[in-house]
Length: 497
Image (cartoon, rainbow, N blue to C red; front, side):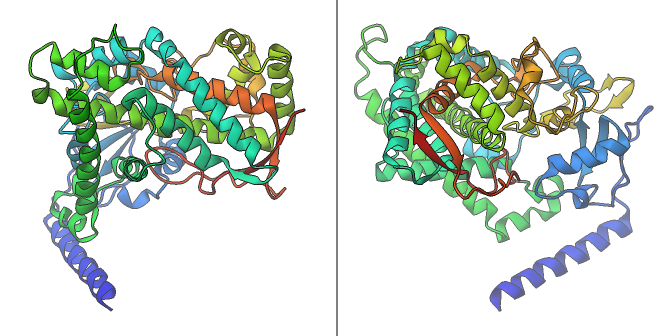
């Protein structure tokens, strides 16, 4: 009864407020000389009523009617939706500087130390310095190579767990996430945490963080409805996530500061915390930079765990649905490694079909169906249209990956399309930008792909796979900033003799 009263109260107040605003006709779309195509919107709500929990699918439907550059309104906020490779190139290449900023949402500010990270930080001098540390010190090719022993050990543990399943169905979705989480823990913090109470708590908090950062808070777009976030518990949840993550990271930093004696050259194993502490200690007092260290570590976890796990999950899903592709990949991998137990980087460089499979999986199932949003810092013309400063930009790679003008039979899983193609996912070819492009492109591609390729090669080389129940696989994705399967992937492995 109490729950019903709350819902009724919320509905009543919202309805009265909407009627009041409509009567005052406060919702006025900004005028422009050459406005962008735009579907009809409602006063106050704008186009929010046209969105489901899977907005990338809604955007694809709307873009077919209104075009690859389309202006929506989320409450008072203008939102430019980009749905073609050509239009994405305009935003992230030709006008990259004009769209280099991020919108500043309260969940991002609260969890990520008011913009002290790299992924969501405002564009400016701090962001440039932090990204420089990220690219040159944390995720350079040399550093990625230095973490290979960790990748190999975690991959061997994963393979052993599959062996121990003895032909029983395993939850690959859960195993992929735990695998990437443990690998990032060792690379970032120096040890695994997943088996400890603190580690399990941190793992849950990381999953909740991803969900919170991708949630649509109505108060961000309709300020007078901010009270809804207090009533539905969103504000309290964000506060709890931020506090919990900070507690874990603070304890790691305090422990490490007590042993900050050896230089990086003297240590046998170096992790991200070591590197960041040394970087920020060079400028004097580390304590003044603690929030920066913690925020960047959260970026590493956010980008290195969920993203990689999603790619592995969808890649195996497609291979299980397409036995011919699975056999072709197994033949390639097994033929290259022969009787060897260990797969080297040189081996993986020769696995052209493996790379094609992963590219095709990324095309159909990008970890971010909508690339992380940007915001216009100035008035700018895009393909002849006027885009006002403050407009949020959402690039729908989900739509680009299914564009029939770019891809033959775009809904089909066909890795062969990449075998004789130079198209890559590093931000140069706008047909395939699952990790973004330009200044705000993902700096962790090399780290993630090293993890994904090594594990994928091992599990298809050493096991034959089949679906757990033999039925058709549910390929629907769930809501959130990253695109997980709705139904976890279960499969049965048989070790190859």
